Length: 311
Image (tube, rainbow, N blue to C red; front, side):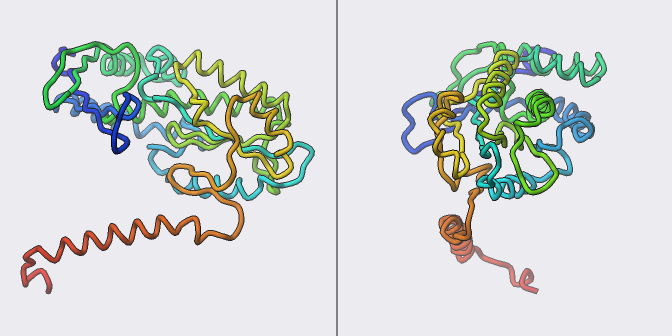
C-alpha cells in the first residue's frame, strides 16, 4: 500500500481533568478515508469467522456475544468465593498496560497462521498493520512523522478483531494450564468449571489459593508477556480472596505481586458484589442516569418542534 494510505494522525484525549503526564492521555488514531475503507473490508471478511475459533470466555467484539453475559457470569462466580473447600477460592483481576500499543506483530501473525488463515489473507493483514506512519496533533498542528514497530491503531475497526485474535493465545493458554492441573480450578456448587472471563483486555481469573498453582499461573503469565509483548500492570491488578483466605493474603501478594481488594470491585464498568445491599452499589449510577435524562429533556425545551411531528 502507498505510504499516504497508512498515514495516521494521533489525537491525545485527556483521561483526567488536569493531565500532567503521557499516561493521563488516551491516543486516538484518525485514519484517512481510503485506509478506513480497506480496513472495513478486511474486518467484514474476518468478523464472520471469529465465533468459530474465539474462546467462549471472550465476549468482546465477537458477533452474537454480549458484554452482559460476562458480567452476569462473573457475578455468579463471586457469589461462590467464600465456599469452604480444602483450598480457598481466589479471584484475580488483571489490568493490561497499553494493551493495543504492545501487540507484537510477529506474535499476532503466527497465531493467525496456526489458526489456519490463508497466506494471501495474512499478507493483506501484514500490509495493513505494518509500515504505518503517525503524526501527533499538538495544538491543532501536526508534528512530524514517525514509524511504528508494534501495536495496533486504536480507532481502526480491524484492530478490534486483530486484538481479540492475539488475546486468544492467553485464553487458550489459561485453559490448557487449568485442564492440566485440575486442582487449580475455582470451586463452585455446579459441575461447570470456569478458569477465566475476558472482554478484550479486561481479564478476570478464577482459581484458588494453593501456592503451587499460583506459582504455575504466574510463570505462565510472565511467559505470555515475553512472547506477546503485553505487560501486566501490577499496580492496578488485584486479587480478591475468600473469607478464610485473608489469613494468607501476604503470601498471595508475595507470589503474584498484586494488591488485595475487598468487594465490591468493578468489572467492565459494573460492580461485582456479594450480599444483598444492591441499592447502595447502584445509587451513584442511578443518580448519574437521571441527571443525563434530565439534561437531555431540558435541551428539548429550546427546540422548535413541528406540529406534524406530534401526530
